[in-house]
Picture 1 (tube, rainbow, N blue to C red):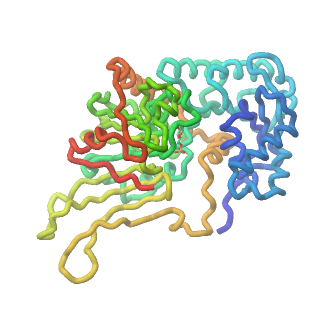
Picture 2 (picture 1 turned 45 degrees about the vertical axis):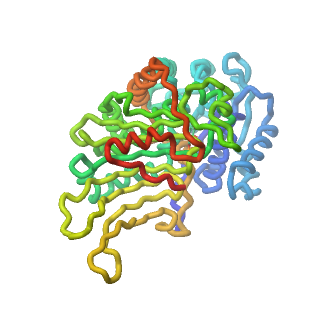
Length: 484
Ligand code: BG6
């Protein structure tokens, strides 16, 4: 297959927090892959800026080690690595003082695209934005990239939006939700809006319910102090699951463009009904003989923070009235498995006598692992014996369907950073979207805090607490099996 990689324009990317975990694990290895693919022009500059007292050579060593550890097979390309190292620079910087800014001014060039990645605590956003302007480093063409957590409630998210808006226009602000950079998430839009097949069925006349699952096998070990103040609701539901929900439920935008798509997503969030607390299950993983409990991982023996949430959500609009959306996410579960399943309604009438089984079509969109889709259809079981019906998946695992020559799928971060350089905001959250998501989430969190809700314990390696199963069973439905 001929490569279809289109190089972006030459850029200067400044990474504040350039020695941090995200920079070493994701941002730099991702940029290295874009460099090797030919998408990142070799005269671009990546400038790490952080507190550590390093020089360019020290930073290059640090990043070469990070690429060796997190970069995958490409890290073996020593010639490519040496060339990539030539793009790297480092500036020791004081976000709230004067050190380093003059050097940063010298290193960033006029006339090339400039992006500033704020991979630092949100409390520093204001100071960084202000200094970028007073030192005349940023201008109206600059882009800034910010990460989640974008606030911890509506009030703090608004304050962050105001801080950024004081220095940058909305069209310059790229709020990352890395789920939007995942291949299958974008495929969701391609499938919905690029085929005539599904859209007529995509509503309450044909859909029984929709399940969105993001299950992880990892615990919170190592990030316990952050996570314990956040919990699954803030860490996963308010952002990642909400984005998936928006993409699956939104109306077709008039065109695939940043504001057209984001306007439609915003309408979904605003149409979300408040969730009755009987329709939310919170869980916390328990210890086994060999594995620590959540409380041990979080080093908080009295923690009531949830590492699992399941809930039933309704969208109050014509398309979805009466169709429940079941969301669940959790850590230390049975399998790493993220999937959206659109479960269609039962046949109104079966012409096949003696066939008692319930047959339904299910479109399953797998985010990870084995990215792909399958559509469960009912067919005749092959062979003699009359009309016996079975359900089989029409499977489209992308890796199989596209064959060994398919271009390698870029990691979410790689794609999103290249979108920043291209100036495409479609896969980034707009300020009003983030605020609307918090406005819906806040009362749910306040509700359980007021009730002193204690999360239900669940066994490590299970599918979550029993109550989550009951949430579905009460409605005569069941969760899809968690398969890794
Ligand atoms: C992050 C969360 O945003 O997403 C983590 O903070 C979570 O808690 C991670 O583990 C999951 O991302 P992925 O891409 O591994 O599904």
